[in-house]
Length: 370
Image (cartoon, rainbow, N blue to C red; front, side, top):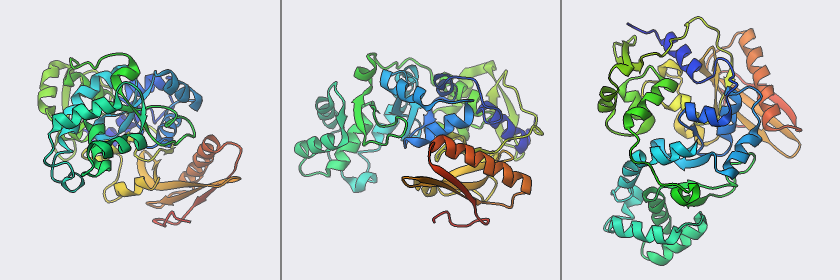
């Protein structure tokens, strides 16, 4: 069966809860999506606000404090907000890939080349121990242990070698404190689970992001073995083809969305997983409209109109006011423009409650900088 790009678009939006806001809790949504991209503090809150009806950000802050949600380095070597079970069972898959990076010549200009990885790991475990430690303190200890090496590179190596997570207050609502790191097992009081099958992880990816190719799975996870994982799922998956003839896999009972169902405007957080979890992003990013990843690093975020990326926005604030500037990537109808403006005002009210808010829609392709 061949699937059109529009079927793939609406199916992705439905599975991401971007067609209708869900009544799920933040924990349930994190579980369903296999984590939320949380490299910076605000995006997961925007992602949850876009997906959950009447979302209360305090629920996430409380969950980070009571350790029922955690922010940990997982897929693609980036921070994701996940439930503790996922932290314990996904980390063993990710760690071997993370640990390969620091001792390559391309890592920090070869800063760690020539050192024994196991000896470096042992020192890192001894330094970090069972109690959280700030990045600044870890860097200082790295300088003590390796005075002839770049302490920042040693610190990054330890953070790759040791399964670690970022502890609160960083990641709480309106809190962008500097990272404080803890090893996963003492923070959660449980051991890592190396028995969780990669096939189950991929099955869950398909539930939230499918149908998808093995290259899409690899882009999302940065893990090897996708074809073997799909094969291990047997009749739990079925296959389709896309408009270009590529094979797509999906959970056998996965519903495909009506391509004509309306898709409401959504303003997402920068680095939202929905944009970064397929090798072929045309199901949500039109050809030639993809922003460079460095744009997201500047807190530039996507606007979805009719289900596809059709603009970028950024929020500018001071003590009294908040301004949301939007740069369309194509021309909008009057109705689309009005819907974008309404959603932007709603997002500003969520992000900057109590401040005077304004929305500015620029010309197509205009620079977002004020």
